[in-house]
Picture 1 (cartoon, rainbow, N blue to C red):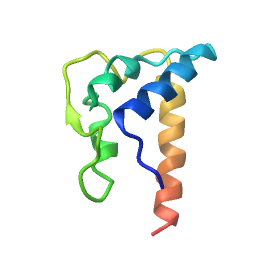
Picture 2 (picture 1 turned 90 degrees about the vertical axis):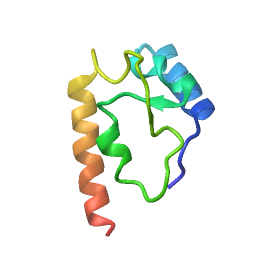
Picture 3 (picture 1 turned 30 degrees about the vertical axis):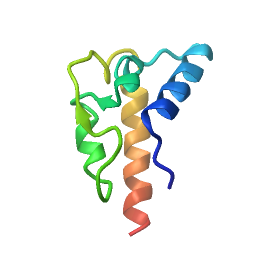
Length: 83
């Protein structure tokens, strides 16, 4: 598994936006922080995560919530099977 730094995360979210999939997390990524909604997922990593500091930006929710929930459910299943 490769952990993305804030620059890589920003580039990825900008690419997603160019493909017509806006993501409100783009507001947080350049500052290297994660929204409160992302904090539970980030605690599943061993050691400090580069995007683990909290921020007050308005990222992490909105138009893609159902999709994000599906991705999270699949991720949880994969992580549970890899232990």
